[in-house]
Figure 1 (cartoon, rainbow, N blue to C red):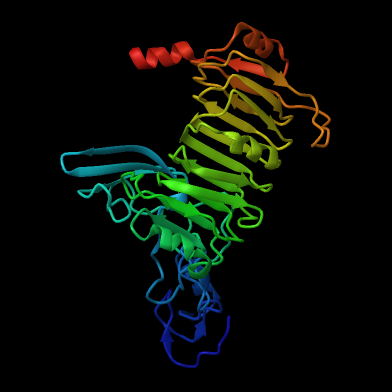
Figure 2 (cartoon, one colour):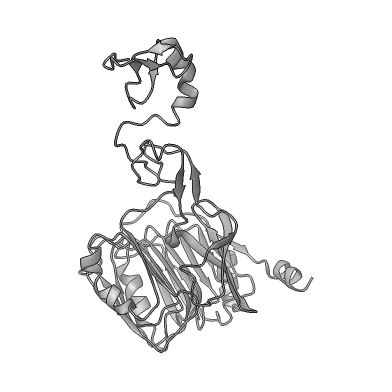
Length: 379
C-alpha cells in the first residue's frame, strides 16, 4: 500500500478517514490492510491500472466504463441456421460458435441483415466485467482487432479494392450478402492482404477469386458458400489448415485438386453439395477430418491421412469406383503409427467392393445411420 495521497478521503470499507490508496487503480483508499482485504472480493471487479484496456472489448477502462463490457457476436464465428422471408418480414437465425448460443435478427427489409436488430436471444456474445488478464485461446468471446465485414451493395467492389489502403493489416475478413443473393453484379477478389488469416465469402456473386502465397501468404482458414459455378477460382495456399465449401457445382473442378495438392498442412476439409470428382485425392500428415457430404459426382477416393479421425461420405449417391488407403506418400515424412478413424456412409450409395474395402480395413469403423435418419424424417 502507498501513502502518496495526502488528501483526506473515506475508506471504501469502513467509511473512516483514510489516505492509503489502492496501489493498482489508485481510485479508492483504505485505512489499513484489513479493510483492503475485506473489500477485495468486490473491488477486484473494477480494479484496473489507469489507462488499462479490457482484453475482451479493447476499450479503455475508466471511471465511465468500469463495470459494463459488451462484446458483439463476431460475424466470422456465426453459423446460419435458417432464413425465412414472408409477410413483409425477413428473419435470420444464427448460432454463435463463441458463446454457443442462438439468436435471431428481423427486419422488414429483405436485404438489411447488417442493420437488422437482434429480436430473440442474447444481443451480445459477452456481457460482464472487464478483464486485463490475457484471455485463453479457447475463449472466443472477444472483440477481434483487425477484423472487417463487407456486405453486398453497389460499392462492394470499391470497398474490396480499397482494403490495402483502408485496412492493410486486416486479419479476419468476411464478405457476405446482406440478405438476398444478386448474381447480376459480379465481383473480383484479387488484392494483397499479407496479414489475412481467416476469410469467409458467403452468398456473394464473384467473377474471380485469387488467393495465393503472394497475395494472402498467412491465410489458414477459408470458407466459401454459394460461389457462382462460373467463378474463376485460384486457391494455392501452402499454409491453409481449414477449408469449407458449400453449395458449389462447377463444370471444371480442377482448382480444387490443385488446392489439395498445394495445401499440405490441411487439417479439416468440410463440404456440402460440392462437385468434386469423379476421382479425388486427399494427402497429408495433418489431416484429421474430411467431410464430403452430398459430394456430387464423387466416384473414387484415394487417401493418405495417417492421423485422420473422421471421414464422411454421407449421401454420396454415386460412390461406385474405388476406395484406396495409402500407407505412405512421397511428399510426406513417414509416421510410425496410423490412427483409427470413422467413416460415415449414411444414406450413401456405395458399391459392394467399396463396402468390403471399408469393412476389412483395421483402421476403419463404418458408421451407417441410414435407418435412424429415415425414422427421424418419416416417423
